[in-house]
Image (cartoon, rainbow, N blue to C red):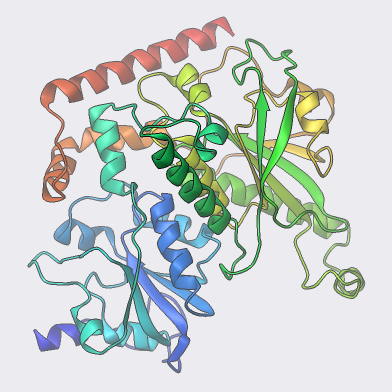
Length: 458
């Protein structure tokens, strides 16, 4: 077994990511690795904790083949998983094709002294600890595993069609007024959830304030048409960084269920579109940079301040049915919050961004409202009529991951159900019977028919 630690060490020119020559090892440079299948907030939580232990975080990502051989099939491709890791606010660099059994030569080549992993045990196909070599070298650090979320949990929700993860009101859950258990238990859960939102709102160091977090409340979050103008109000959940001088306010919204490469690339394209506008307006000219940095604003910053609205569970359930959303609003909001392409998150954003909603955003009416090509919810009306009337509506064009949404991911699971069932059994999770799977397939078919009917009647 001793030589396994050194096998398949690339030569200069063969490493998957530069640099090709060895980097001096530093305790401030942390390594974390894994499958990172689905970009759920448990993965982000591990990266956040790891980032807080150093000044750089390198993230090793295993190949599809190695995961298949050691654990079972992935849901997302390597390219999609790299996209998710690159989008995490606390990731400095992704390293694809990292070995499944963590290798000392690999982490040393990239200059990392410590390897970080959660407090759960990860084994290879032979049943041995994947971190045995770094543990033996005294270069292993443990962080807490995020409870209540994992790829296995999410696959189980899909196959078993459960709905007990839904949240009726996030603000009431955070205050301990709603949820399972007695008042003391609900209060403790609410405090833990609030703390996690605050943690995920931290900056790229994981130590300082970062994203601003708001919630929106109104009488109904499911309007019957595009002219519905519900009154509501904003509440600050986390008082993060606000727009800086000259930044354009940009608004996006969605369900962001199973926060995937489709959502991530859309957000990335929004920032790119704003950078193009910034270049045209002289944002990146030396004089403009000097003016911003010399005006007491700290380091330079992007030309756009991106605000992401996240819809309630009831909104997505209303439009998609079955047991969508697979992730509840708390989980989806954390996924969006950890993304480096956004600056603020609004929980319980209305399905129709009305004039009252847009013009009362605490830091001003958006300069642009963007919509992308990753469609998921079948609509009977246009929710962006107000944005169009205000002349601020913009669209992002086609991109390579536009087909990847929650429905696509569920279909991937169903197509390879037997392999995922075996993976669930290895994890000790309840397997879905044939009847349950057929029910899921029938419900998905009915949802497609409903979507076509709505499209005809729109």
